[in-house]
Image 1: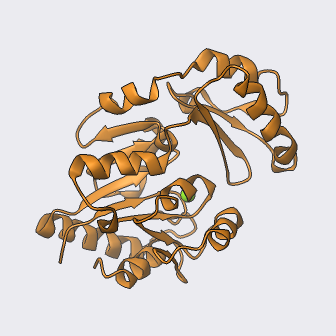
Image 2: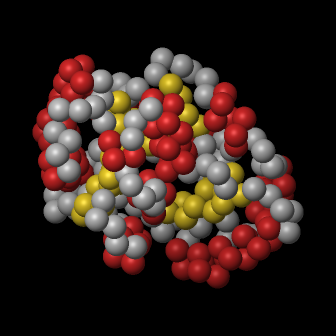
Length: 252
Ligand SMILES: [Mg+2]
């Protein structure tokens, strides 16, 4: 057995919110932890959650502690045991990012409802945008922001969440950053997800991907439009789908 980098989204991927007791997640956690202790496998959670909302979930669900945390859709990386975002990642994202300009520009669009303060981060400005408006509004916001030649990207997910972040930050680029820091090959890296903000995890060529069986239509559609033999669409949902995929690729 060889070590690998395990990267997983949390909500509706690693964590099934529809069940009280998720035995498959306990099985997955146990297997991952054993693999880490025996072979040096790395565990990473990559989530849209802020540090505050991550902590709440980690305590509630008793998540095993990760080797690194990718929070706020990839705009913050915390190495194990650290309360402060990784400075190398911060310096990369700070280039050409002007938070105030993003906030001011977005204020011109009444369809955008600001998310709570805890979700507004140094490199992430977050809104709720109803799906019915999204097709019309998203290109308008993007072209408005482009006028300032900002280094930005829009991530729309789950038919409601809109995150405006630096162009060089997403879950996939954060995964790449960690993989290189730990010196793992792409083929020894596997990412798991269920929704639109996980697409970046699957868009990185050689690394392996597991889409859980309960994935949202936006991700399934993208998967079929961008076929890749390194990506596996599981039958089972959440942790059950992850276990299925890890077996499929021979990681476990
Ligand atoms: Mg999710």
